[in-house]
Image (cartoon, rainbow, N blue to C red; front, side):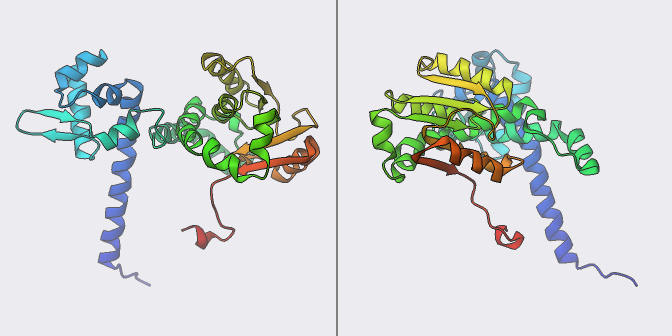
Length: 289
């Protein structure tokens, strides 16, 4: 039986696809801008020419000119046709050039880039059902996760999330023992350690390279003497007397979340607290649309 196409629905889907394609291609230009410091160089420069931006960043004018044109077409920078200069607006600079900003965004595209590089492994996982471990992903996933989530932790962890827990801030101020499980590069661990110098913090992650990076960052941030980072899984990390155990955006990635929860329970003091930060999601597929 012949199928009759609804031309309007087809056109609407094609336009949706074109929008997705444009965003996908644009993602690589954001990563280039972040890695080469192009956004940072534009942040306080005011109107700038491709030649000037290339000179400031040690790049070639020809490529920078094309990059700027793409950024302008996507609405990331402003273009003045009268003089050929480009400007990074204040709002975009807040999101693209300031890594301390709670709205710093480029890390998200580093995560996306990792998935493209992981595609052969994902294909194999679909065929075999063997899964793909966190440690098996491209390194940009770990870098991007830290860059993307750290601003949110910096904006909310000390100011609102920890105070929402009964009695936890008082314990941290006086001196508590804290485990940050699935810590990755240690952004959340280090933020807490800076805020509560009387407390002791241990970050656990089973990914060796992330733990090694976390140790370097802790030293750089001046908390290496109060923060430990150790290689351990969520079901096997040592210790039984923690005042606080925290899971930041990682429980959903674990192969056995129930087993992890059981281990957390036995690792806490009787009056200890388990803090879970997770993306909001619903059980039924249609409720997530």
